[in-house]
Image (cartoon, rainbow, N blue to C red; front, side, top):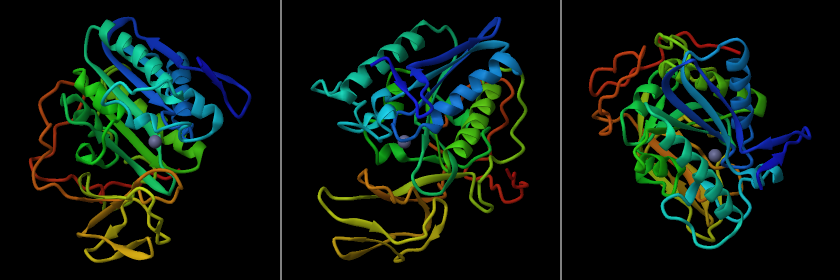
Amino acid sequence: MASFVSSEGLEVPRLLGRVSGPRPGALLIAVGGIHGNEPAGVLAIQQVLGLLESRIPPVHGTFLGLAGNLAALAAGRRFLDRDLNRIWDDPPAGADAEAREREALERILRTELERHDGPALVIDCHTSSGPCPPFSLPWPGPGLALKVARTLGAPLITGFERHLEGLLLGWVTRHGYPAMAVELGAPVDEAAAVLAEALLRALGALGITGPAGPSRETLPGVPEGVPGELEVAHRHRIPPGASFTMLPGFATFDRVTAGQPLAHQNGELVRSPLDGWILLPKYQPEGEDGFFVATVPDRPPSHDRDGTIPGSRRRTPPGRAHPFRNTPRHRQ
Ligand SMILES: [Zn+2]
């Protein structure tokens, strides 16, 4: 399948669009809808392409937008046969829907990354089922992802790579390119607007749309008092076949304490094993991750190697999270 038909009846191709500036520079590839029930990423990319073609023309390099799981987007489901964002460690056996989607997406990613001469970054756009402020997940690898993540005006979370396998981000970094995800949970139009703003900030940080200063405003929805950088310390994996229900009312970045009941699993309470901030509490039926708990890292992320980005701000001193609590909260 080379396209899907959106709920508005519009045909959406895998290659959502490409806009290049007159001079060489960085390549930003944005992927939306690798989970088919997350169309906000596709909408965000389309918004950014529209802006680059009209009001904010790129000056250096290229922005490329890709739709992820076309078959699942058409069906409005996270996936058809298996999660397209968990099968990137090895080429999957079989010829099911997601194996075909992966093959097509891999082909275009490989072609575009290999033909580009200059810095490149892949941003995978996600939305979560529950209410969730925006955050970024720079994957370990070239330092460019971490540097761009620090310009987005949202907390960045490291350490997911120790808990999740088979992500597109892993494939990209194994092939030598930086990659990060941006995630948030909100009604689809709102989520698309925030994702589009994040992509525009990344384009500025990469110099594609000209010199960018540091982001002075947090992205809409970032709560006050959340540290700028957190690290995943615990993943609650739901065993196959177990019944799992989150207790009501949890949202990403809520504070939790050790021993606090968070969910029911097979009739028993699941408690937080440590103090921290809860991430991605599972209120949707699909998926095996119940929740994550993050803490402030006691050292800077190990993959914080140097990279160069025009216009990016200096990193925070080692070991210090830069808090957003003193930053005015942007409201929509
Ligand atoms: Zn997703």
